[in-house]
Amino acid sequence: MPVSEAEAVDAVAMLPESSWIRTYVVHATRQTTAPLVYHVGVGLAVLGTTCPIPYGMHYAGALRANNFVLCVGRSGEDRKSTALNIGKDLLDQAANGLIGDYPGSAEGLIESLAEQESQFIPISEFGKFLSSGQRGYFEPIKTLLADAWDCHPQQRAKAARQGTRVVIRADNPRLSIGAACSIPYLEKHTLAEDWTGGFMGRWLVLYGRRERTDPNPVGDSRLTQTLVDGLRLRANMPTAGWCTGLTTQAGNYWNNWYHDVSTRKLPGNIIGIRARAPTMARKIALVLGWDYGAAQAGQPWKMGMDLLEPAVAITELHIRSLVDLSDVIAEHADARMRRSVIDAIDSKGGTATFGEILGRLKMRKRPVQESLEALLEEGRVKRLNTSLGFAYELQG
Image 1 (cartoon, one colour):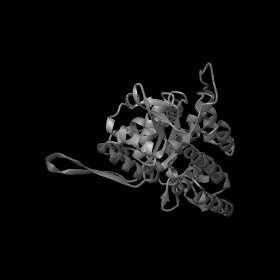
Image 2 (cartoon, one colour):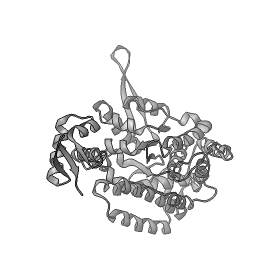
Image 3 (spheres, one colour):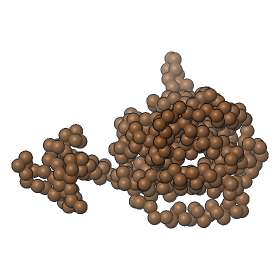
Image 4 (cartoon, one colour):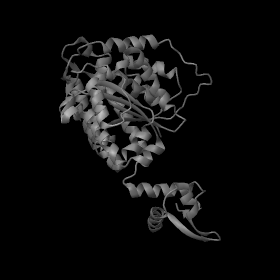
């Protein structure tokens, strides 16, 4: 099951009432019936964009407060894009120069980051992005985004007049992304290797399902100006205190949780999230430090339980989301193809002819035939001899 409203509320309740993110979640839930867990992620990405360039802490290198957030749900049902636009609109009012454009190419993104190193890019149709990423010419941008999550310097050489070249460089990229994706696209365009590898493993995935209804969603602007002012104030602050580590209590808590998540039994196709879940928790804690912690004072500070505990709770929502989504993440391309064939048969009531399967999948005969043969050998389907020719029936 997706993350419930109650589970997301429990995580948000750990934040103090003065928290910008907590206020943002209250505001966002008054605008739309989208799952509350989406607002947690979007709020983190938007607020993290306002952090000063030097802000961060040491954790396996220099760690920064930018996040890639992916809201996953049903197409047209869970208001993913609506949730994303709430945060975008507030940032647009507070500091519109921090909103970046959809990355059309790796070169274009580097040029954009060279001009504005701190950016929030909203991607309401992440399925389109994933689909493009499966084509060779778009693959470099996925590699670039993986590096940008780590905030590594990026550069490219651009041809100039008379055979000269100009080097365009972003020394300190701080890229945050808020994206929305439907489950069918996630299923169709990602494999286990994407999650264990460099790209999808960097996304804070939040899988929700709409529970609330509102017959008259006219919105509520009572908190808008408070939130805009909070973003504008932070966006104009030139410095933030560097986090020097954990308090003793937080250190003990962290060690216990790190050991737990590192040894936890997880589905094989998402087991790679173990490696990055702790880094995500620290990134979230850095945003919370900028929200209501000591970072705004501009002096070195230590991270305590008030930041680390809610950051871990939000990370657990991410882990829970991926565990629930693991059934739609195929181990490899052949496994994904076999599942598509099973879904096509299931759509016909559990029994379908070869022609009906082809009509449903709109694919060439050969890969469908190969998948059916594999499913027959596995005992997942049974071949029937009918008056219309061979049909295939799901077993078990």
